[in-house]
Image (cartoon, rainbow, N blue to C red):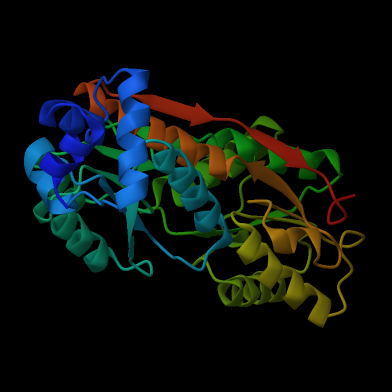
Length: 327
């Protein structure tokens, strides 16, 4: 069965069949006739042949840092949901927070005819930019605001400032910070700056002894909190840049019999599933992660369909969720 036979059985021209298969204009009457024949014959068009005709693969490469992360799964859900509406399939490239793998996937997708790329970025180095600048296909970056590129990102600075201000309103004055490296602009740099400025604007001196930098794991949160508290007994509040880090910090505090929030309040960012079930329940910031995926997909589809060269920026808001870990 081929396109000529389908045209003959449907009583339309080969050109009409081609337009139908490539989502071009076909009258409703002819659409019904063609679909009826396709249903009866079980005809499946060759994807390779379609690619040759349209120069489109209907594949989108998505580069992500950790597929097991609940945050990342929410973003990918949004991306997949939106792309599916336009007939796109997703190729996932899981990097396990390895920059070399990110570089590899950028090159793989660059050389393997995907129609576009969505990059869930933790860091953007000069090596990343060198490849991105030479891409012949559109790319949208999620999670970081990178100059000259279309991005969907969160208001990390303001969210961090807000939760530290909430600690201060809860009578905390000796506030610790557990974060990640500043090579991650959004989580490492912007959230730290929000912490610093909230202290400054509330006339609380910044004490560098209260700052600990680790990685994104709960184990790092545990060890960072252990080091922080063992050397600073007067800490009465802690801001952790992610829920996962906060869970580890809370585990350490509980292991030492330190009461949350009576003795130490703790806040974070993420509103992960575990933040709702840990004891005490974690006060945190809700980010619209699925929405970020949806918006990134919309921008990319627009670029593919209309050859749109505009630099689109979307900064998403947040919602503070007060639970039991703060007074």
